[in-house]
Length: 341
Image (cartoon, rainbow, N blue to C red; front, top):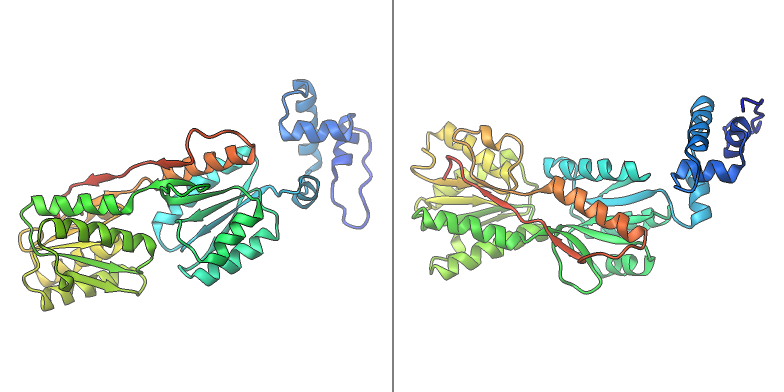
């Protein structure tokens, strides 16, 4: 131990062989010790780790990728980073990946199918160990890329029963239907559904609302307020003003996302429209601040952190070739009733 170490002059990078020389063990022992293999004696593991720390050794992910035909990162595709929903999800994914020796390589699709396809092509060039993708609906080219890559893949935010597909999420339609039933039980009859972005999960929520309204004999296409623009507080306020002006008989508005609903509550305060006395307002996702609105927002709490942890654990099991109890995990959701309804 502590013998002189000569580094390659080209890069000056500390190599695995340098650590082996410093620790007085073989390179294969260093490799096994740093991977955490149980067969390596605890004293040797400690000696190797101390040597690596002393020398400032950082494993070369490219070399490990070439040796194993798989990288040490997981490609994660999400629609956007401006929504706290996906920030919470990513945080849970990263916290679960790191102890297992993997890092997240994040791609933002902006709800664009062609952009998602291009991102996936680029990320597959880096030989990821696994894939985490948002939702189950995508174009045919992207589906084929995933299927032909041979890389384990888990779908987030939705629970799918499709053969050969692994997923962790919940039923967007069922959650939406439960919120609609809550509003109907509160004697609301002219319930508008206001949505932005209009991605696949938003449209599933729309179907949940439609189903309950039709079952109650109250569905009216004029109550559907759909805008493809990105979801935001400002847009929620605008939509609230438009609905109240053009559909004065509306007695409840179910917004597809909390940021829209929060914007609507702020607009109601500004316009002195009493909530819930004049109109009930509900949201979806229980984003930060919803419980602090005036009045506090009734919403669907979605377990994005739980989804991130469960999906990552499922992916790690697939990477290791372990058997799964089920290819689809439904983590459920929670109706959170507050003062806005």
